[in-house]
Length: 195
Image (tube, rainbow, N blue to C red; front, side, top):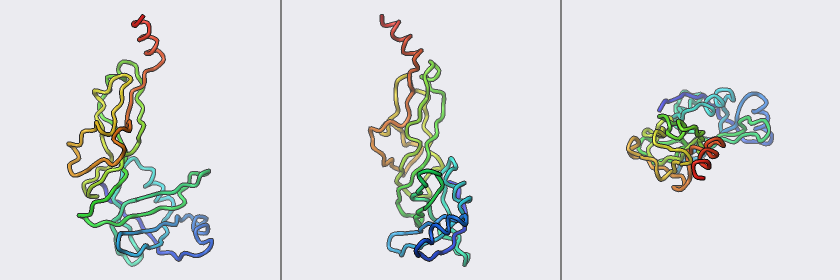
């Protein structure tokens, strides 16, 4: 997993301060780690937006003004309901041997049998919550869809974890992750064959 350095500035929490930060192109955020005091910071909105909207997960070295780097990952991001701008972020610090839960984007590999038959691939869960050491986390979670047939799904419980030792998927086991939908044309063709 790629490590990104992101500059942060400590901030003081006071009335209307968050809105002033946002107007000046900064995002209020907090940095926390179990057993330590939570630190309020601000981050350049543009840099954070690029990071949040990338297709991969990242380990983030938060760089404080004194030059100290603190290793973290994004735990939560809040968006404005109308503008979709980032209005707040939470960063969780971690140590190398610590077990954490992290959201990792899903990507697919292979050509689905169902798509070759005319079906439409639909990714239902665009990310999975994984539990394990942050250093074991992939940038994205690759699922092979080669055997996925028309009108079938891959559920969380069916995802092989052989390529991801030490990691556990924390999402609901019965949740569908990827499916191949039958198009109207395929449904009509199946109905003709059945009659």
